[in-house]
Image 1 (spheres, helix red, strand yellow):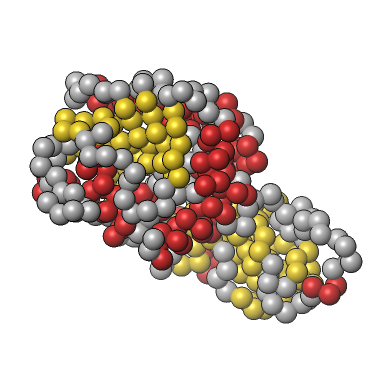
Image 2: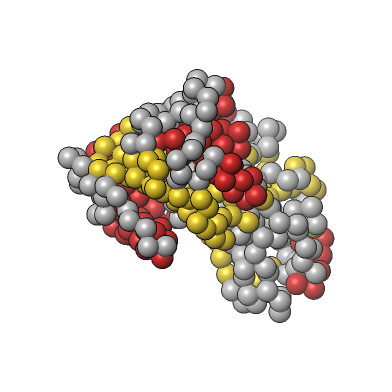
Length: 374
Ligand SMILES: C[S@@+](CC[C@H](N)C(=O)[O-])C[C@H]1O[C@@H](n2cnc3c(N)ncnc32)[C@H](O)[C@@H]1O
């Protein structure tokens, strides 16, 4: 197995072990396996919208479906309402175990752990492969291999339905007179050990009279100050979900890392448009909370409890890197191997900073066997 796959597997293994449902859908309500009904209902809606594409093109579904990057089975279970046999494939054993444990269709849905760059299926053996919010976390060279593998395992006339971000569109600076935010601290640590990771949850309201558009790299980020003086500029980040109209609000959960010197600090949160400006420099009001940073020896003996009032989020939120493969490359890859791109429709799954697409591919006769050549 490649080092790249080792890295991907280890990152997801950690996420799957600590908070698998939230790692799949990073909404606050899904922490610690809460709101499972809503979680799995969202999978049904997702599968309905994917299969609507096949309906639109009047294409049959077939019997056998594969869910690549299945996580805890959100989409695999929903696929079982339309397909006789479903296989969920995932790089993380922890995800696969969770999916198996709650499988309502053990006779028809199976889950397979796979940490190879190939897919464990025979040529032409399935009717449909789906994959959403998965390839966006995999580096492009590996994604391209998986796409060829998906085309290999689907029979001619079968389909692939998958989503991949393409690129980050050019950023247009938000004008200074629209760079006005109200920030409210919703949850924050009051005390941390030196170098410890934690989270601060903030509410962000658009106080200006202009819309903050999507795709403009708008983040909430933090600094550390001591007696008002900046000691660490640029620590954690979380995106501000846009578009956000005047008066509208959203939330951000920023992973912060305590300074390495003990002492009394101000943890400051501001809005930043990446490569453009921190908004405090434009007159917007950042927000601060006092945080006591202590040396490890200062912790009371035997006290291994979480820091007071720290939001309950796993320590791996920042590990979800995002990657894109240009739409032109995806389309020409499939055309080159004799497949038909039925549709490449703009899609919102990768968040507001990315141009992302949902692809519907019909598999043709001529394909490349990545293991054995053409
Ligand atoms: C954000 S979750 C999405 C899960 C599922 N697609 C859904 O929408 O409910 C991404 C999943 O992809 C899996 N994954 C990441 N890289 C993978 C790879 N190389 N092969 C298989 N699964 C992978 C992760 O372990 C994780 O479970």
